[in-house]
Length: 481
Image 1 (tube, rainbow, N blue to C red):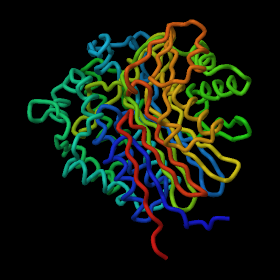
Image 2 (image 1 turned 90 degrees about the horizontal axis):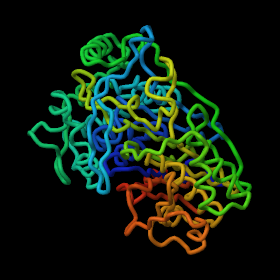
Image 3 (image 1 turned 180 degrees about the vertical axis):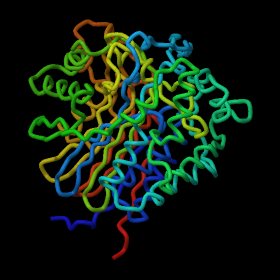
Image 4 (image 1 turned 60 degrees about the vertical axis):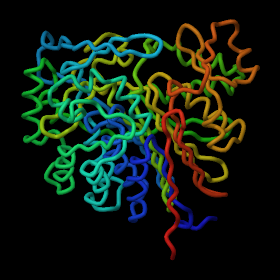
C-alpha cells in the first residue's frame, strides 16, 4: 500500500493564478480543502466573468479515510418576508453578441439571487481545512493588491460581458477603472476586494449577513428593484448533502445530488451507455428529460480539482451566472444574475418561493477506481456540463484513457435541435446521430465545456487542465522528509 504522504499534490483549474493560489497553500502544508478554498478566493479576481464571492457553487470532499460529503453553497431564491405581489422580477436586459447570434440576458438588481460562495468557502475551511484562515486567504489578497495578468480565455469572457461588467458606476470602478475593460495581458487588480479579504482573514467578516454588509446591500437592492434583503442574507445556510453515488461498469462514481440536476443527468447518461445506447442517443436522452430549457448561456462557471499528499481530494465548481453588473457595496465583489438565468427557471422567473435552493447543472465529481486511484473532475459550460462530463468519464472508464487523452478527445453535444460536434469524432459516433442535424465545428471550442482533472494514486499523480477553457495545472512535490 502506498504510504500516506508519499505522493505529490496536484491542482487543475481554469487559470494559472487560480491554480497557483491553491499550490501555494499546498506548499505551506494545507490540505486539498484549504487549497480549493484558496483557489475560490483567488478565482474571483483571476476569472472575473466566471465566478465571484457573490455567486455560489458546490464542493465534493472525499477524505483520505473514504468519507464523502457534498457541500452545497449555491444560490437561494430571494424575497424572504415579502408579500407575493412584490416578487415580480425587475430585470435589465443586456444583449450579448456571440459569433453566431445575439442573445438577451437578464441582469441588474432583480436578477440577483442570495449569494452563497463566501459562506461556502468559510464553511469548507472550518469543516475540512487545516491551515489558519489568514494563510488560506493570503494568495488572493496578494493577487488583488499586486494584480494578475488577464489570460486570453478570461479576456474573451470580459469582451462578451462588456455591457454587464460596466452596467453600474460601482462595477465600472472595479472592472474598468481606467475607462476601458482589461484586455489580454493587462494587469488586473481590485483594491476594494483586497481590503475586504483583510477583514475576512482577520475574522471581522463572517459572511454577507454581517450587519455592516447586509444593511448597505439590502438598501442598494431596494433602490434598484432587487429582492435580496436582510432576511435573505440572515436566512442563508450552507447545506451538507450525501453525494449521489452510482456504479458505472464496476467503477464507483460520486457526484452532485438533488436538488441540483447536473449529477443526475450525468448518471443517467452513463446508465444509458452501459445499457448499450450509442453515445449520441445517450446524450440526447439526458437533454430531453423535461429539465433543460433550450437556451444558449454564457460560460459563467469554472472548476478546480485538487488532490493532496495524504489522499484527500476536492472537486469544486462555482458560478456567477452571466454576472449581474451589481456589486456588494464597498467590497469589489460582483453579484450573480442567477434569478435571470432562464435555463435555471423552467417554470418561469421567480416561480419558486423565497428561500429555496436553485437547481444547477454543476456536477463536481469524484471517481473511486477499483485499484485505489481517485479522480476529481468537473466542468464549466452551462448545459454542456452534462455532456462534457459524460464523455470524459466514458473515456476514463471504458477506454482506460489517461486524463489528458480523455479531456482532449473531441466532444458531441445535443442542443435540443441537433448535434454540435468538435472535429475528429469517430465515424461510429457520428453514425449514431441517426440522421439528426450535425454541425461540425472547425476547431475545438470553449462551448464544449472545460473539464479539469486530477487523478491520484499509483502509478502517480496525473493532472489535466482543459485547453478549451485556458486550463492550468500544478504538481506540488512531496516535501523532503
